[in-house]
Length: 118
Image (cartoon, rainbow, N blue to C red; front, top):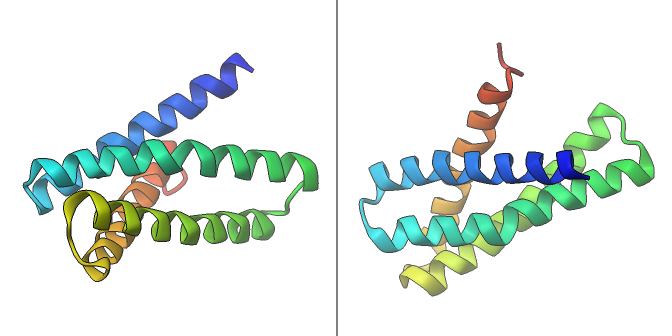
C-alpha cells in the first residue's frame, strides 16, 4: 500500500511539473499555471486509482488497458476543460484545446520518463 501511494504521488508530481512547464511557456499567466495544478490534483489520482482498481478486478489485456486509459483520459479532458473555463474565464473551446494539449504533453512525457519509448 505504501508503494502504491508513493507511485501515485510521483505520478502526480511528474504530471504537475510536465504540464506546469508546458503551460508556463505557452500561456505565461499565473492563473493558467494554478489552473493546471488544480486540474491535475482533481483528476490525476482519480484516473490512476480507477485504472489500477479496474485492472485488478478484470485483469486487462494490454489492449483493454489502453482502452480503459483512453476512456478515462476523455473524461479527464472534459473535466479539465470545465476547470479551465471556471478558473481562468476562458471559453470552453480554449479550455478544451488547453486540456487536450497539456494532457498529451504529460501522457507522452510520462511515457518518455518511464522508458516506454526508449
